[in-house]
Image (cartoon, rainbow, N blue to C red; front, side, top):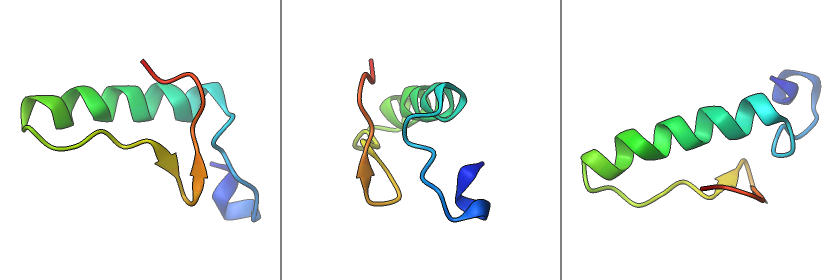
Length: 46
């Protein structure tokens, strides 16, 4: 949770896992994938 420290967490492996898990739920609900963390694009999403 780097955002509480004023830093981006887009490169943090734990945040990537959280976004991947969230995207699985979004897929079931037919919602678009989340591809950014704040305003920074997340690299290496499945």
